[in-house]
Image (cartoon, rainbow, N blue to C red):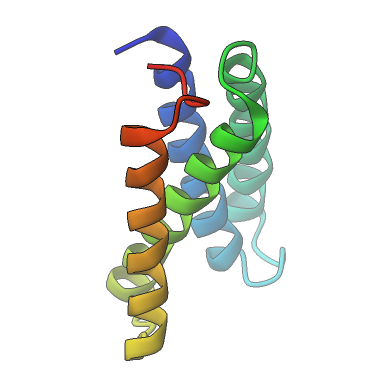
Length: 111
């Protein structure tokens, strides 16, 4: 896997950790989850900046946000008991299809 995609993968992981910590921080009233949130988002933006040296911003952001949405929905269901209705699941499925179309067929994406 090219290095810029490794940076993007770790940016997505850091963003997912940050968003999970944001939920766990209870609106920034719990110190450790709030601190983890700030550190994780900072790491995510730094890693995203490294990925943007090669990947076009629209493609990188589509992958970063789309995969992040799906990961957070899964974590929300498993860790926080948040349920999704059919429309939400269908919408996320369409996001996943969009990510696959970009990655597999777009000449704008770097491979």
